[in-house]
Amino acid sequence: MQIIDIPSPHFDDRPDGMELSLVVIHAISLPPGEFGTGRVIDFFCNRLPVNEHPYFRTIAELKVSSHYFIDRQGVVVRFVPEAKRAWHAGVSRFADRDNCNDFSLGIELEGDDSQPFTAVQYEMLNQLLTDIRCRCPLITRERVVGHADIAPGRKTDPGPFFDWDRVRIS
Image 1: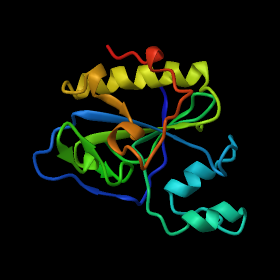
Image 2 (image 1 turned 60 degrees about the vertical axis):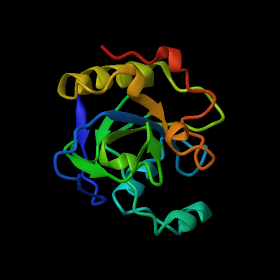
Image 3 (image 1 turned 120 degrees about the horizontal axis):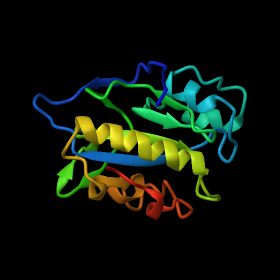
């Protein structure tokens, strides 16, 4: 699998001795509902052109990143090395543990709550999950969750059109 590295400035160190044990699936599109604009990459790299769209002004001050992003055509981008803590989960809780960024990897899919994801996105997601599992044996299928699962009431992604039955991890 080919992965394009585009470093984000939005990351820091994980707590000492922290093992990766969770993957959080997200959905994002910028502007909302528009795909293929390249603005998700700009957002994670702190170079969003805030005057291009009114929505961009509302998120301009956010410092957000993810480890990986999979666009609608299946292109995989890595923003933050797995050993570092990306800022994707926010206020979050999983299995009685707070601060999911400490022990998780974030994977953003280009999408939203209003339409299905593409077949190639699932294909690349599954390849990426299997690759991650080789390095992080604590990450099982049960420990691949949505942003909504770790931040209920605050987040809805990856949304109702995400087909969890298509997620495979070897």
